[in-house]
Amino acid sequence: MNREQKKQQTRLNLLATARRLFQEKGFDAVSTRDIAKESGVGVGTVFAHFPDKQELTKALFHMQIDEQLANRAILAAQQKTGLDYFLCFTEMFYGFYEQDRAFSMALLKNSMFDAQYFQGQMDQFITQVAERLTTDLPNQSSEQRVSIAKAWFGYYMFQVIIGLSQPEKGAKDWQESLKNECQTLVAAINI
Image (tube, rainbow, N blue to C red; front, side):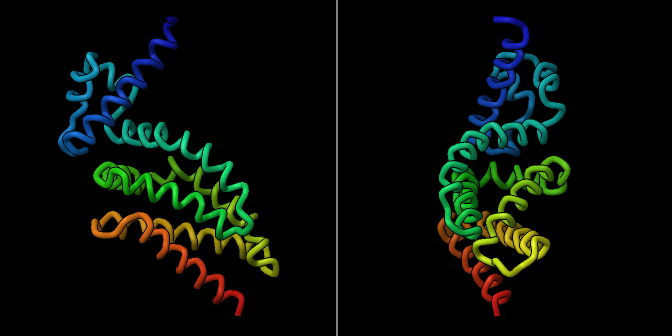
């Protein structure tokens, strides 16, 4: 194994160990020192890969979600309307967030105000949804469809926050609320 492969393997090991420890002990109870010890490396090695716990959390999120996104993109491409396309992705994300609420809350807490990190992905997703909205709202301009896609994304985030704070409600409840909000906006526009 060459140096670059070994470095990548160490990074993946750190992420897997962090995920397991976060699940076992909770995000706040796990330190970078704990991750290093469980991974069999020095603390400096953790910091060589991740400058802080926040960056490790974001990397862990991306590692877990990238494969799901690739699989979901195939299903999403088959959707007939912009709303169905949008809901296809949000259903996957809501399921991910519900699966480990403590990690999801830590992720949101640590990245909520780091828009730069997610901005490119958000912009790309909003553009894709807006393009698909030509089926739902053919009489609206491109700019209007972008505004609607942004509003839907805002509804999505709002449901994540509400959903995570209400343990009695699950991802299906979040999805249903989101769908209702999105449909209400489209109906208001079509009046």
